[in-house]
Length: 528
Image (cartoon, rainbow, N blue to C red; front, side):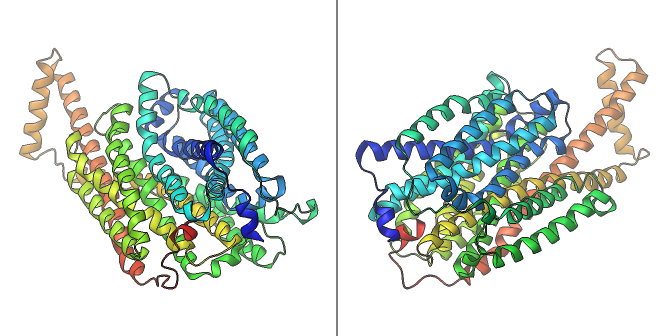
């Protein structure tokens, strides 16, 4: 019955091409928007008068909206019809893009980014389902490859696109660019996308309102604790402590509610599948590495090296092209029966190499050429991780469980990215303080080398027309600036080192995962 209904959604010729383009367009809109703001953070800080922790909420609020809505997409599509829900999400995303561009304050922008994330989460998961069901079973592997290409390249295309827009226009245009695309996507969705007939509307009193509330409280509280913990002195702050408790109890009661309620908003029972449980953890780690590294590189190149937004963004293009090149190769290897866990393990090893490479080349004045091969390694690593993790997660599922499983992996990838950005921001702030104190403690004003350095700087400033007193003051200021810059570089080195260690530690656990020996030819089915 289920298969017949899915087959009835198969399209051919121009109509299938239009539906595929519409769904990919919407998925890319959503994914690019997760990272396009990264290179505009400095400009936003200046315009809106925000601190770095405050402006990082522009990314985090969007991710929270995504994470809350992704596990509910299957249920919402059944309630309102997939086409209607998809179109409404595109409209919400487009309207919020306009409102983001017009925001007058940082918290107003954060609010609209959260609402934009609620619209965007549906675009990601529903696009995957629409594309897959538009293709016959034998071509679903190709359909998933098209979708996977968008998902993995999208976060990498965000920075160069954002950089070009910020340098040639102004940061609001990174949101305005969504408006014409959103309008076209809405019209195409309403005209060409069809909804499956198996959905049954539930009465309003059967809706799992408590589950929705608990999910929002858990994710929102946890994210706030991660984001603001460092700045607000962690558990010495009453609000941080209260929200940490709320996240803990929220998670407990959410799990209990979803396992006992007859119409849960998120069906947790699907996690009984061992491969899916492993896949959700791996998706979290993938999101952490993917979004975390996409966040930290533009931040380092702009704040420490003084690059423009466009230069920072363009740096990521070779990695995106490498990933695109890797996708069909990975697809062929999977179809030939190479176990997914071996490819994932190799991908993690390559990502470890990329991270250690970053750790070794970062200095206060690293040149653009030094990043090239390091980022190529990142592109290869991500290519080896994405499709194998997806197929490993879903390979032993069938029927409606596949859609539920896809929602979990999507949610965990987004949640991992959200954790990555928040954790890296906090970690950078903390390490910066530690390294600065360490460097300052080693600077003895009575040391001959330090005195020679100060005198040399003083004379340099005096040669530019300053008095002896002004030159001395400028010399100490310059020395302080160099200490701050060096502390910042050491902090970025630590980020790369620990990212690499996380991926290295995961390799043995991945190799212990049992493959799906019964279904060697199940790649296209598993990916669906």
